[in-house]
Amino acid sequence: MSRLSVKIRAWLNRRAGCAELDDRAPRVRLPPQREVDRLRADWATIRNERAADYPDLGLSASCVPEGELPPVFITARFRSGSTLLWNLFRHTRGVTAYYEPLHHCLQLPPEQRPPALDPTHDGVSEYWSEYDRIDGLANWYTEPWHCRDLYLDALDWKPALAEYIQLLIRSAEGRAVLQFNRVDFRLAWLRRMFPAARLVHLFRHPRDQWLSALRDPAAVGPHDSREQFAQHDHFFLNLWVDDLVRQFPVLDWNLVEHPYGMFYLLWKLSYIWGRTYSHISIAYEKLLAEPASVIGELFEALGLPRHSTAQLAELVRQKPVAKWHAYAPAAWFARHESAAELLLDRFLGPAQSVAAAAGLRACA
Image (cartoon, rainbow, N blue to C red):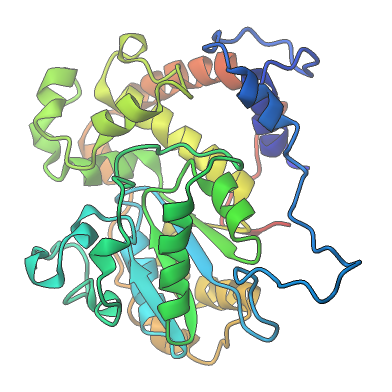
């Protein structure tokens, strides 16, 4: 079991009110859990096993039929290169790649979806054609999944969300790939609801990701306030913090000096959850630097043919990295990151050793 898994298991035990803990770090006191939450913690290993004594009984339709390849779920933060990764799968034969299935625009009929494109999304002319074959899609997107209940544990009851995702998988021509930007803290639920799925985690250096999320770095400088940032919160940092603060009370604006500190806290929590629950983790910078190698390893891990690797690698446009140097000195970033890391040490418990550098990582 990885150290990240141990840290999350200890955190889940604390949330469930377990007394036997394997860490002694000071930690933030969490809100008291209801009795049903403590009960559900005991269900973590329970599965809906087949009643083998009665082979004539009907089987669940949610099982992946034998011989079919399981779906792929991509989890990534906003501005981490997820559109690039989606576009690579979109150009792969035998794959239907869905762009951000929890995007709020999918609650609208096709003719009402805004056609605007992000100019940084190279080689993309539209986002939604894969959904056009599904009649009445808006009737399946029935809850505000894009902004509410952004944390789900494995036992949370969200049948409408499960049915919506299952609809996309069933409607795919070939293998389904779903590129998410809003499931960072729903991965345990996804793995339980779709046990055959393969989870791919994409992440990016937080300093460059911060600048990309600002769009105009000059709009929120190193000395600007949360109030100034609120006018340029293009990727919903405030909304995420408001929704997640009950599960993660460390996401407290009173504990950070600059909006980057809160951005980093959320980035690091997402990184930990992604590395823990995903089968494969990819660094955006490595994808840019070694596209053919990374795509080839990824496709091999997912059971996809590698013969198109060279052609797909041509879709990866080289972009500058480490642009953060023009925003603030390294010491400025390090100061806010260190303050956030101390908060996370108190919340999750400190790491025992420095984690190995990540590029493409496969795990059980």
